Amino acid sequence: MEAPLEAWSEFNVAMLGGTAALVGLLIVAMSVNIKDILAAEPLPSRAAAAVATLTLALVVCALGLVPGQPLWAYGAETALGTAALAVVVIRAVGSVYRSSGAPRGTRLPKALLLLAPVVSYAVGAVLLLAGDGGGLAWLGAGAILGVIAGAAFAWVVLIEVLR
Image (cartoon, rainbow, N blue to C red; front, side):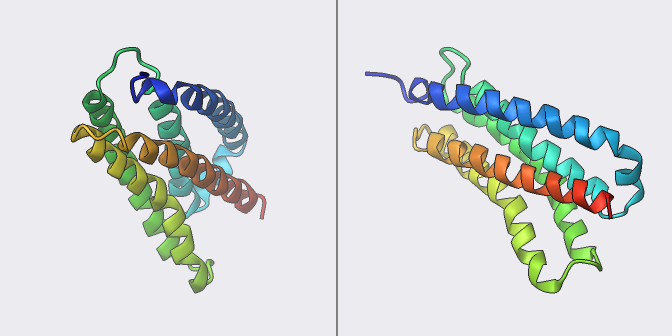
């Protein structure tokens, strides 16, 4: 019978390759516009959250490929990355709520989109630390949500910079 982490190897390989390509493209796109992004008050924290969210998806999937790694170690690594991501995301959520240009009805959905991967990673990490292999599904969901949230926020930053 296959170990729980090894059963996720194909998912992690696919996510790792796709996310790495996306991160690279978005960093290049943002770097071309970095002066404008830094000059527009709400955009730097949102750009940071986009890149951090995508980067954690990349790292979590890469760490899931470490041979022979116990679940608790994978959970601990994910917990550390999630804590760092939470700091960046909380700053970006604050930026969303302080933004005067955003219609009131859009603030909560934006905040929830950014927070969803953080919550999923946190639940997964706690479950893995407790020895529950079900945490792997939460990490998989976190990676998918991270790609969605990261790409969406990066797109918004790139569109806003052109306005």
